[in-house]
Length: 230
Image 1: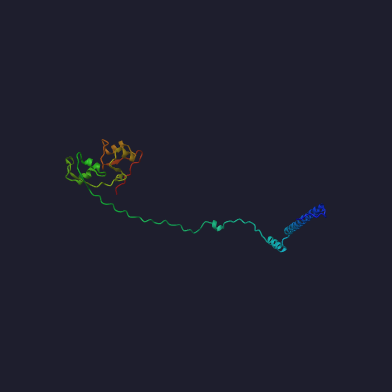
Image 2: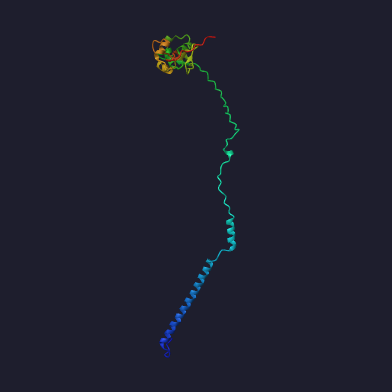
């Protein structure tokens, strides 16, 4: 055990210990201060360095050799604005005309007489067939003596003209079709029913399929021209 010496006073020993501790602390502080000062000096020296003269000269020379060209508007060449010359127009190609296939020949139809039939009623059942056509297709058959179950030949319908035919005298002729009447025919040609009746000497408005009607000229129309016979 460290027992204090009776010959040395106790106060002087404490003072010596405190003094040694103070010296150690001061030495550590001095060492740390020296290191911090050295680091700061080193950083300041690196920040204050100037760029090399060789690099500055190259950069200055490159900047002085830069030439800025003035802006020039880009205009299309005059040749592009001029319309093309000597252009050969495309000729329309001729389209091939397909021949119209011939229509099959129409044949007669067999009809069986039923109760209440006559030539007029039978003709009305077949558009485009007239009473005269039925009579010509069935020679020797009496129209007033038809019998139930009797066989009749119905001829093929006559081609219905799309427009009224024109006679040699210039008179328009209309062939009555199934479902027509005087009112509809008069409206089609721009005339009145009374004018149709007077032109065709009709005492009533009843007409038959296949009947030919003279079409009078419309009101305020010039009379038809009659060409002299050559």
